[in-house]
Image 1 (cartoon, rainbow, N blue to C red):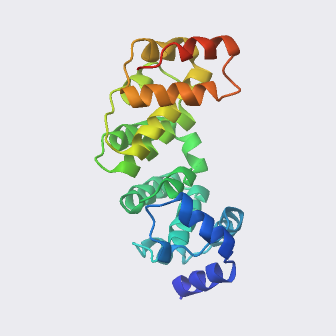
Image 2: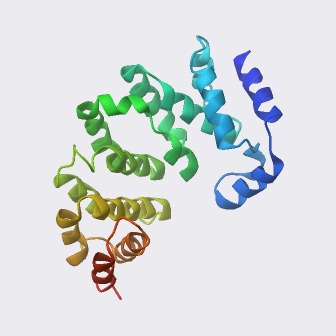
Length: 228
């Protein structure tokens, strides 16, 4: 059966040193769930598995036993070429995403060709009450709608989010720091007017100041906008 086959393959690729590191940096995943397979190995395996006709059996087996299976699941979805199936599978998988790594590394390539429909899903995701569904929605807005498809109303959506969750607020800060690098003039207003929560405002400035895409002059000004 494909599930047992995948688990056997994952344990064959286990790196115990990498496992120990993952346990440290992803504290909300139970250590016993972590096998310790490096990301390039998972991506390679995902590309092979995505071509199999029986991969649906693995995708249906939720929740997975291991964190590495969650990672593999995310990478398989990222390889899907059928948009309708992909968005359906993403929606089904999101309630089981329970850490920043799986959330941030799931990025279906096919989304680039279906941005109008994707935007409808993003709006729904960021209104969710689930930490990693919100984070994923903001991440997709950051990835796909800060360049040619940017609209000033998008940062407005993100600025209205309020959460007690660290991993939501970190993604909001990441979004605005990236937006400052790409759409400085229209996004600066949110920092100048302190339209973000204080912690998120200051974290945005910190991340922007660390970016090579922000000019020294911009960094100097941004430092003056911290909330005390």
